Image 1 (cartoon, rainbow, N blue to C red):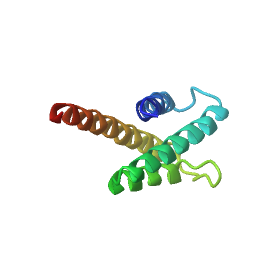
Image 2: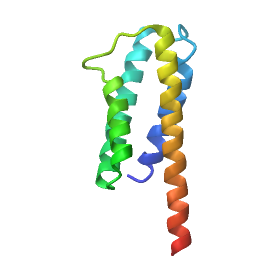
Image 3: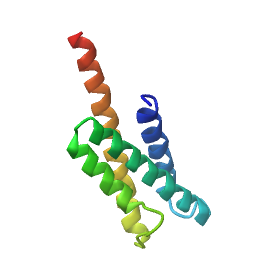
Length: 109
């Protein structure tokens, strides 16, 4: 479970960065992207909620909502590029805070 908190956001960041130049992949890739990002958002929201970190829980819940594959949002390509970059930043900040929190916990012991 601990490794999934790191692996899922990293895989999601890679997939999002690959999706930024539109037209490189078939339409199925973007459907897979929705599923992966939504799943990552839900997973991280639950983990954050259990850790009583409501800010991250809400943030990841919103990410999951934006990328949900059941009721997809149909936006223009330019808007999706901005959203993709924003989600890359959100996942990167999440990873950084998890890493720094772990380092602080190790120093306290």
